Amino acid sequence: MESWVPLLDTFLNSTCPETEASLWLQQSFNPSSNTTTTNSFLSFLAKPTDVIVLDSSSSSYPLSPTNTKRVMWIQTLPNAVQARILSFLASDHRRFCLHKLSNLARAVLSDGQEVEFWVKRAARQLLDRVSDSNYEWVSCFNLDSEEERVNNDFGSLPEWLKDAANTDDLLLPWLPISTDELNVRMPFSAYGDDEDLEVVVEKEEEEKEDNLNRSGMEVDIVRPKNDPIEPKIVEKVACLKTRILNFESTSKTVELSNEIRQICVGEGVDSLAILGLIEPWKVDDETASILISNLSDGNEEELGWPSHVLCSIILPKLLLLKESASRVLLTATIEYCKLHQRAAVYALVFPLILLIEGINNPISDVMIRIMKECLHPAHVSAFCQKLLCGEEDDRKFICLPFHRCLISNQLVWTESVFNLFYNILNHNVHFTQDSVDQLVYKVNESVGGFSKSLKFGNFLLCLVNKCGPLLKCHKVALIEAVEQTNTLVTRSILSKLATL
Image (tube, rainbow, N blue to C red; front, side, top):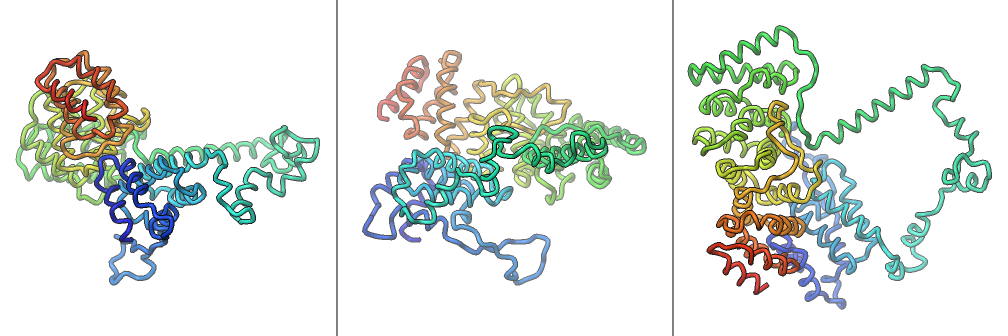
């Protein structure tokens, strides 16, 4: 363990962990010792470890043996560190045994939904990288070993298909099953009853619906359901709307928030449809701050009720923000986002940054406060990577249909966006190589419109200072872009680039 502490410290704190880890491993490699080799590092990461699983539903103490789970040692690390280690193994995979790398990636992915998004993505990348092999690694195994026999048999047909493959009466050339055998295995025949067909089709539709539900558990644009609302509830909601727009006192507003929560959460109705009827975003800032402070108790699913509260009360106000947000609204929003970080990302930060007209300075200031005071730097880094490098499906967010027309699917690059990234970089958020690549691309694309912008220049200077090792491959392109600017920091940027 002690021999790997410097390497683990690199993965935890370095701005370019892949490069520094590769250099450290090259300098520390000792083939005569079993403590500092590539195989020993993989064995160290895959070492079985018992961890305690806390069950919030159980109040029995001390914890019983059933509360422990055996995992690999790498899985005990923070998610951001796991992702960095897996990314390093993918980029430097030629140094390691590909079979062990494959086993490690498969073991990480075997936990299914428990694996964090970026860890899962890095593990898949590693598995894809080691799968594209030219088979040179076979020579490192014993020809009589069980591992090679398994790999050699991978592409062969299973025993139960070999006999069928030798016959001439095949249904399809690539499917070694005869027509008669297929008819026997069919759940219904071509001339069967319609009822059998309906049953099978219904099952297939249910399976598709289940798959869609499982895939939709990540994040999606929230839309109210089309389920009808009972007339009694509609009348009650209309009364609440009238009362909430007429602020009387703090105690009355607290009572109203409890009634709204009871209807949306306790009655089992579509909370977004109810909030759409109440229109709580039309209340003043003081009333809004009271509402969000009393509508949640902190025990709900992050992307459920807490995100509905944010996207129906705070988000509409911020989307139309032209001046600095009021202190009472901003304070309440910050405190709420500290308790519900995922909801803050998908119900505030993502839809705000994708504003169809591009964000302005007041919106940028609010986003900076949320990122600095509510989110961990690793979460901000993951958000930036999704925003800059992800596909359109990766940039899904939560909002009401009433406000969808104000939000785009693409990031509009304004001066305030560059100022936002300037503050993110100054907050010691580590950017990945692909995120830096996209930033450089946008710099070259946007330099003509911001050639005299000091905020744009400050962003460039900060980018070079914070991400210097990741910009070496873009040195020429950046110099050409910076030479088109005319600000107080242009010469400083050029001198910094010259030292890369």
